[in-house]
Image 1 (cartoon, rainbow, N blue to C red):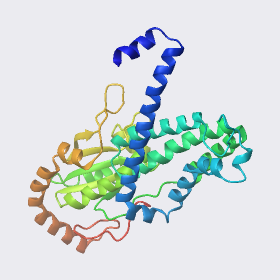
Image 2 (spheres, helix red, strand yellow; image 1 turned 90 degrees about the horizontal axis):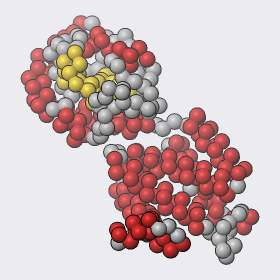
Image 3 (cartoon, rainbow, N blue to C red; image 1 turned 135 degrees about the vertical axis):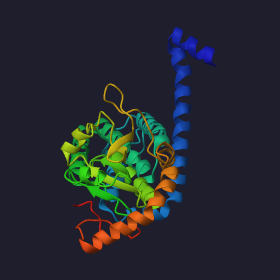
Image 4 (cartoon, one colour; image 1 turned 90 degrees about the vertical axis):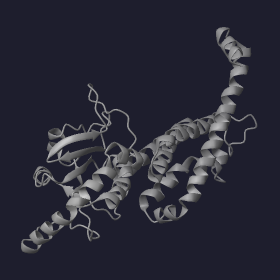
Length: 334
């Protein structure tokens, strides 16, 4: 089979085109089916969580924008007036070019979701690439519909933001004035700090993972913190973290001991671009040796905990987070 494909490329002609097209078609069909099966299994597994999302405007709007072309193409009374390339002239069904675009979309989503960590990333990839495909499909169908849909996408991006993670966590949120003081306050305390930006979809997807790690490993000698370098630009320059989307350095995790940086992920090459690294729980536990750090830090928990408690009783500070106590209010709006 490989020799036949090479021969078809070496001597192009009508026969070679007829031979290659079925291969591309069956590959696209197989990719589409695998993408649909994977998406269906993921949907059924996370159905309780998806049900909660239905109450959030961002996901409701994204869902309707994702199925917009399907609704327009199949809507009775409207589809009869649309253009089509089908030989039978049925304008209420997809033509061969639209099917090809949709199958290519399924293959792209399947490949992108192979590196997705959380359900939010899976759903986000589906929404993003579906909107791109809808823009192409609407412009191909009618330039007026394409302009209208593109305007709706721009308005959606400007007005509707993904909901921030507001679940339980043991994380201290820093500002540009408090981060250096807190990291250097006690040399016995190890800090794992996430540098993030609210506009970054990768940071938003990573938020529940980092919160879950803080619930499992937080103790008096091992603390977790976050700082919004999209808001505090001086902090990004001070710790040499680029906020450019091209650099792909967001989010960045830095390990501090005694106020000094020990390691960071992702690492950065000589050109200032981040080395590819997957932000999942297993990689973070392994790279940062969280199990070993946690065992060492627990020995300091009792002494540091009593010291912190006495200090807070004598002089309480605004915004201080106590250990082993469920956070009553979030510091995201600080």
